[in-house]
Image (cartoon, rainbow, N blue to C red; front, side, top):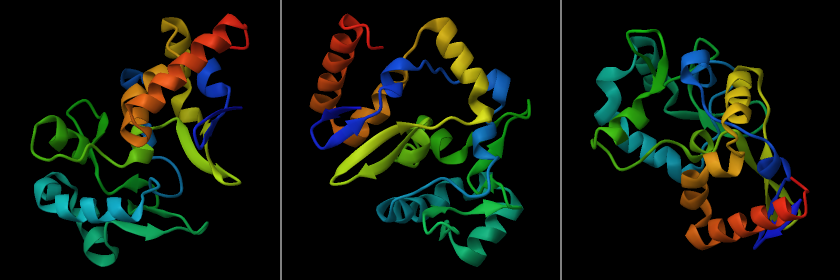
Length: 193
């Protein structure tokens, strides 16, 4: 682990390679698992505000879940997560003509229909933010559905921290990310990564 400000970063974030491979996984991370994506309370408000923008793109099942319990709920572990359909699909999951799933919120953002990209936990994946005493902790999460992304990342030599530059800046700021890059170069020089 290395410390940057009030954040401790696992060496795996520097060491491991990752590059999303939607052709291989078809966006499975949005539809697998036993809970929705972790969200912050302030993100729930943003998701609620975005409902009119994405409502028509959501499945009828997703709309029914949202009408019944809202865009988020507290899961068995006590975490606030996006609501899910049929015990697995995030309510914001949609499908294209090839059967690949995508996030309705991210699509709306890319089309300029909203200013919220998607929940930070989704944007930062495969990094999960935890805590380590008084510090935030960035740890690499490994999930079988992302096996192709780890393989492609190795092939293309894209470290996790580099793949996640945009969401890391979104969360911690540009100066913090520049310090992270400096640490990465030093770790490479020392052959620790």
